[in-house]
Length: 175
Image (tube, rainbow, N blue to C red; front, side):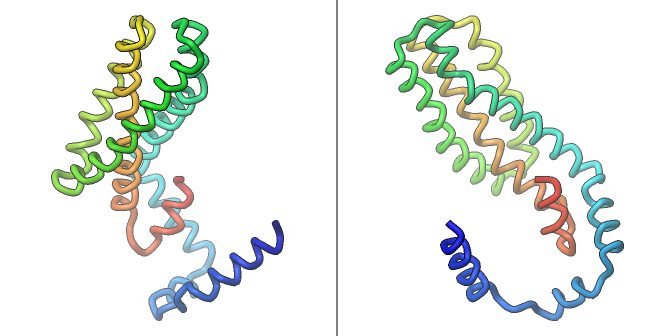
């Protein structure tokens, strides 16, 4: 893999544009100044709120995607092939949710999408243990897939909340 990574590195070096005058100003800042600016940015209220929400979303979603197929088979008694099909509905809905939520947030704003979508995405998690039957569980899993619409909107919100002068470092640290 090392030769492949070297080849990719050389390719990136060749296609990445040269630094502009503005970039040179940033490079002339001391590491201490840059660190102070980045720390100030990532501890700002909007960024902390978005980071907290994104962390909670990630933790929950990883738990769901890790255990849902086993849960459907073991607890709900669904055949393995059916459980796999039901599980795939989550990602099919996620594809639609990401495109739809991203488009909607461009038109009505981040918060107008994040707040209701976050609230609605809790409902299927509450209903999942109370639901029986493949059809109803499929509907619940589709609703869980709506959660995937939160990720692109939250990322865009985070990027917009970070000042342009240290956006790369601050967003990278938060991510």
